[in-house]
Image (cartoon, rainbow, N blue to C red):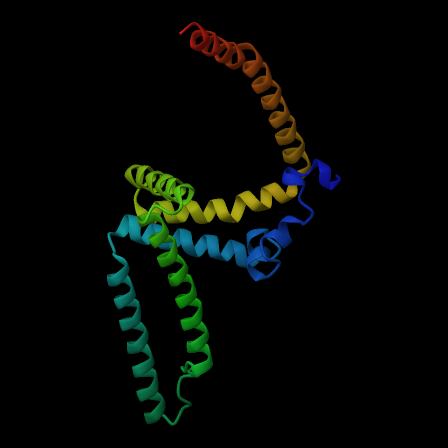
Length: 209
C-alpha cells in the first residue's frame, strides 16, 4: 500500500514511529518472550495487590526483608562451611549515569513548568483546553476504576493495540480513510443544506433590521 493510502500520508513504519529500539520491539511483539513475560509479571502483581490486600510499600518491604534475610544466612553459612559467598552484581551508580538521569529529569520538569506558566498566564489557550481535556478524562476514568486496574489495562492496551495495528494496518488504514471520506461527504451535504441556509437567514435578518 502506497503512502497516499496510509493514515496521515505517513512514510515511516509503525516500528520506526515507536522509536525502532527495544521498546518498539516489545510493543510490537518482536521479542515475544519478553513481552509475554512483562504481561504475566504485571498480571501477577495486579492479582497480588488487588486480591491479597497488600500495598506497594508492604509488598516491597516484605520482599526486601526476605531477600536480605536469605543473603545474610547464605553469607554466614558460606563463611562457616568455607563455601563461596553469594554472587552479587556491583551495586554502584557512576557519576556519568547520575548526571544523565539528572539532566533528563531536569529538562522534562522545566518543560512542564514552562507549559504550566503559559497556561497560568493565559498565553496558550489551545494548550489550556488540551490539558483541561486530558485532566477531565483522567478524572472520569479514575472515578470508574482504581489506579492498579487502570495501570494494568493501559499496559495491556499498549502491548496489544500497536501490534494488532501493524498486523492489519492495510485493512485498518483503508477502512479508516474510507470512513473519513464518507464523513467529509456528509459534512459537505450538511453544510450546504443547513449551515448555508442558516447563514443566509441571518444575513437576511440583518438586512431587514
